[in-house]
Image (cartoon, rainbow, N blue to C red):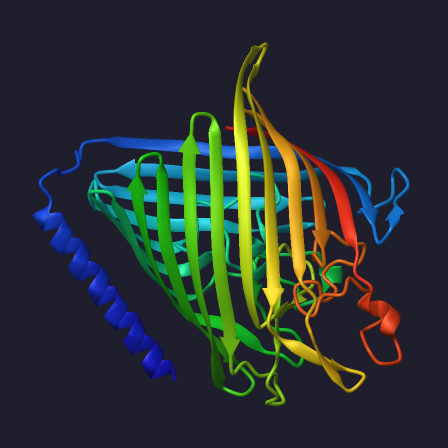
Length: 418
């Protein structure tokens, strides 16, 4: 197994270097190599929320339900010299007592059209940089298919109206540091990945991505495909995940439209006892994990309108509505009958207010079987998904736990970015 992994990695590196040199030599528009710059950047964010979960509105001041917190601070560096580029960012979440690397890569520009990145970089899958307008992202983010970061090598080439990506990732991003009370199996990282828990030692390895995007008029449409290995460390056996996405991003006047259709499937994924599973465990941000259905289709749409302003420091307000629908193809047996997993939905109605370097998201986020929009974080929201208290699992003797809710959260995030 290890030998095969190294062989794959060697082949990928050879192909990346070969095509990069090929395009660089053939380019008629060489980059200027005498430019050198370094930018130190960061952000400071505050967050306020007010929730209505499982049919109940939390009183003011309720911890983790209704509070004003110091959400995030982060620091980064972006540097360029003679074709070599460096980008790094580290994030701290005081409310969660969690910190981790967001990205960190070293790149080289062979030409204005061709570059390669080595390190922790954004996975070229779906609409880039992300298929949403709000602070919440869309549902694909919560199953690891939007704004995902992994550790490996990525290659990008532009040709006329096309942008092509090819990437190989040996593993997910490294684990950060989280609150000790969350336990040794907490997932301290920015993007959602399959992570190990007791009795289920699966991790992500050997991920391949291909992405093509075509630019026309004021729009860009593309196709993305992904394949990765799900490796069980206890069994020394592997399953896999296959995923594909169609995506469109279009601008007209002050309007922006984002549409995506995704499908993914996990195959032959087993727990430590060798039993096939119809869910995988995913986690991020230092919390515990939650179930994600092993096969699903996700449709998402976002529409935004930007209104320019000249009112003191205010320069614009972007109004938007983002909606996601997740249909799961797996089932479970309840009362002797097979029943499909419950669907997951998310809707975010909001506005982004821009004033100088201050960006404020005002969102009314609603979720149905959503891991973050619930009084019981995670539960089995993206898996079987019934919105229940995880301490009261679905069973024939506990049918009431199958009740699902539309939960709503008013969220205001104020950030100063520099």
